[in-house]
Amino acid sequence: MEEKVLQGVLLKAHGGFYFVQAASQLYTCSLRGRLKQELKQEPLGLLVGDKLLLEVLPNETAAGVITERLPRRNFLLRPKIANVDQCLVVLAAEHPKPDYLLLDRLLVCLLAAKIQPIICFNKLDKPQKLEKFAPQMAVYRQAGFVVQPVSALQQQGIDELKQLLANKITVVAGQSGVGKSTLLNQVQTQKLLTGSISQKLQRGRHTTRMVELLPLADGAQGWIADTPGFSRLNMPELITTENLAEFWPDLQNFGCKCRFDGCRHDKEPDCQVKAAVAEGRLDKLRYQRYLQLLTSLSEKF
Ligand SMILES: Nc1nc2c(ncn2[C@@H]2O[C@H](COP(=O)(O)OP(=O)(O)OP(=O)(O)O)[C@@H](O)[C@H]2O)c(=O)[nH]1
Ligand SMILES: [Mg+2]
Ligand SMILES: [Zn+2]
Image 1: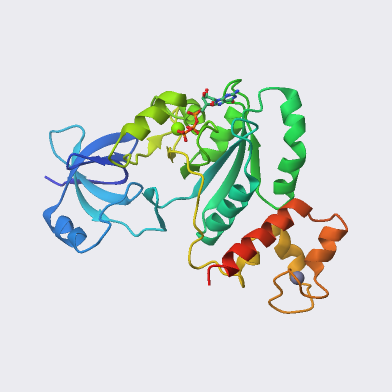
Image 2: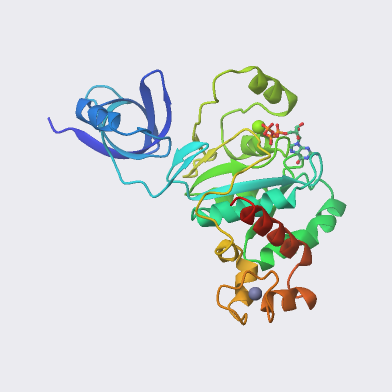
């Protein structure tokens, strides 16, 4: 009898089993011996998000054998996920207040890794809150980023968010307490721990939390992974003082007209970026954060 071969995505690995979604069904899989040997040569092995081929076992409805891993588009090490399309960067209107330096640093890292960022402002529970943050959202929209205002509490902006997540593998990032898990509970079906309970449990645990891709709700194609909050992020090695501006789309627009090739838009004369800031065509605070990151990069050496 001919084996049925399907293409699927690894959602989680646990206790020697691999849980693979293929054709909107979840298969519990083992590894074909030959693939297992091949993977032993690699430090990472299979990652959540890996696209795989599996043979469905005859007479069993939801069991299979993974025979092959398909090529990876990219991968992240923290959290360990392959084939990441985009990152939902969550900020809160308050508790905690937005940390724009952290946001800008994250955006640089994501663009350098060719992962599409989505900036999500949460806890905009009242119209006044939305008004208060409209100028900040406009700054990032003008820079070319996708910005989605939401209130997880009031369930506002959730349908728009769902549309942005469809058909993609998304990871979530943002400081602790911004509402990542609360938001995720509205776009996928599994119940995640939120608030202080989640923080207490995480502190008490010795093992690193297992990464898992969660299928989106309402039968939508696409997956999303929650991550515990973080407040620090190191810049990857490939970002230098010379190329930082390349990952800063709003500076980039003006920067190509500077007098010097390779202008860092810092102390150089005839810098079009500085001119744009002086004339209010470019947000001053974001430019100042660019200078701050430029300084921190130059201090690394
Ligand atoms: N007012 C308001 N509170 C919210 C909203 N979304 C989440 N919260 C609250 O914010 C707190 C933190 O939410 P979590 O979803 O646990 O935050 P998290 O980002 O997952 O935090 P970590 O898991 O620690 O990284 C909880 O008490 C939520 O109820 C919102 O839209 N408005
Ligand atoms: Mg959480
Ligand atoms: Zn310049």
